[in-house]
Length: 450
Image 1 (tube, one colour):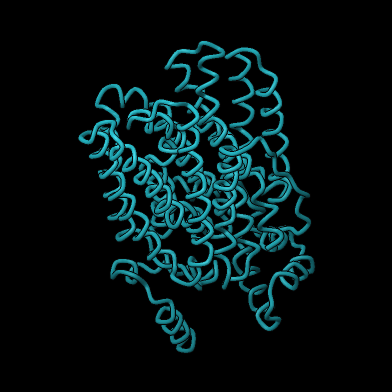
Image 2 (cartoon, rainbow, N blue to C red):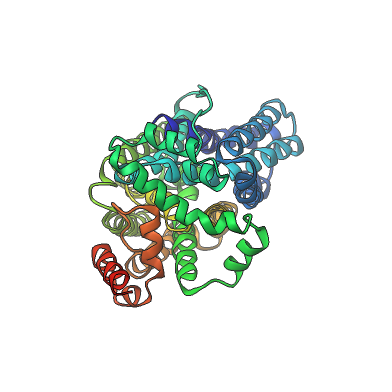
């Protein structure tokens, strides 16, 4: 738990940036006299630039380790934050934004991978949700104060990375510290060594990794569709635009006073934080897929209702109240499901050899989608109205329900190595959701026959 918390600290900075910018943009626009296009670029460029960090993060983490990649991400982000804090102009503000974006790209890509690799199976879902929890905590901090949260670096490396480096004894010590059932440690270590054997035999050649990703087997193709698809759907349903531009949404609903606008965003921040805490208790009990169903269906209903409210109710008290309820409902359903579950699923489905690089691709998809939505939101609103924009988000959210049904299997209670087996089973995948016990029974029968 301590390792998961420390690994997630970079996510506080991402959330804090989102929360601060949603309010600060009102004053930046007035102070620096920036145009609406510059405002969109300033808000959205962070997500676009972060893809550079995510692309580099996979290779970097395999070379120097997950832990030091997270440390590097923090240094780059803090450099950007310092530049932004001291910037007197839009140009210098953009320079700081570029540094911050690269740091975020490194951080959001590697933290879920590290946590998934270090966590025991029974609590992996909850612990891998921590980065998303900290994003929401950072957003809340950005809404209510200028308080900056910091902490000591983690001191325990990922056991799977240690095995990849042939540091078996150190990997065993990590497992001893993070697993309560001692009898399972050697079994897990054997699974990890088996999964890492091909990696170590080939010296983890970069070209082989990218060859597998660019020309994937059927199993890896399913993993990429699932991992990248859920990352993209997480963003194109409009969550970042809803958070970044919540003052704009509330202003369109009829709130004019700036203090009241920012007070309404505080309600959004509290809602996100409360429901992400609920998710951490449910994700290893209810499972990933049920939470995704609740989340995507609930978001669809709230987004559609918000579009209807902004299009028909005008700026009266009823319209304002409904807008606040719908925005809070959207972030609540997001935070209890696809928000945290997205990072859990995308960090646990890939085999060891491909995990860091494939997760980086998924993170790039997430950041590009987020940036495009954030950078185009105001322009789309001007073209089809704010209400019409949320009707579009509702339609996309409806597609995400179908994606969950078709492409995302349940991974609760399965080890990382068992999940890999699930995706490699052609017949089981074609027949619907896989029962892992049946697969293992079949594997044992085949082994005994041979």
